[in-house]
Image: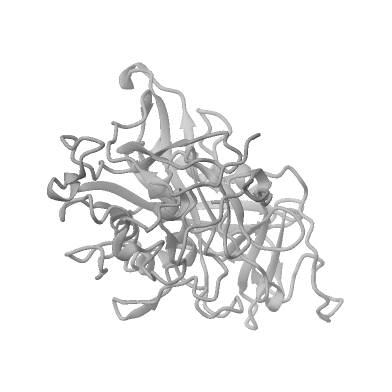
Length: 431
């Protein structure tokens, strides 16, 4: 997840490529992102111990009008002794049988849960690059415009929305569901699933004024990718007020293209974000909060969504960092933390990512085996492997499928992380 908004002007630290001085100052060489590091956005010391997952769940978050969700917890002492029980909320219906007592070991004999189907509208968002005066921009006679509408069909045929085979499910299913089933493989029934019913929706367009973006061109002069200041991008995507209809999210809400019961995907074509020098952020999951009405009992409206960029092959150094890598990353994280509230003990991941939130993909991105190849619908796809709940909770041995800490590739993470003090300070040795 990348949810922070940095209120700064666009400022890129460009590598020393020797391109012609006649090029526009905001045009970067095609190779600029090739070697980038892309991302998808206490007093008494305790040894951390082995975490324990709770076996009970509660209904969804109260007072909100949003997607189906359920809550549970795990027990894991923080390294500084400040917290022991960690609550989390996930998408769908609970995998637990409510008749099973928390301390009852019979959970394997009393599997629970049921299938949840959630509408999954996909809204392609085109990028229209303009001059300082707002007029359409051309370079060497070619209009600077990035279309995303042609990507909807391949995305709908990808593992994110189409079914394929995974070891965590008796029947073919979607990627995020397969990961979630792996986490609760020994508690859930065979028919416990959380799946998306995708629908292509009307395309929307974001207009960017020169000075808020940089861009790269292919040899034929067409736009290869755009890098946008993150603060500018967020302001262009989210509504400014409840009555705003000018942004893609606002327009889709007011047109009825997305609803509070949906998980909406705003799909971009090689649109990357910068929140400072360098590049790139390729996606985030979030929700747009709007005021309730008398019709919904004055519940806060939460439109759960993700921004995800399609990644064309060859742009980045890792050949597997392509197609739906960002979308799979964000969708799995969204399933595991739809409202951005699932705190965890501090952890330092193998990729040196330091966090304290249940972001299932952040600790794996960038590793050599970060992606998982899936052959589906006559194409090879590259969704990202995900860390499982047991990894964050420090359950040892893991209670997930095959005692795994990551999935679908169970060899990416082989042990729970070492407990850390806040901001990943290494705790002192136990006395």
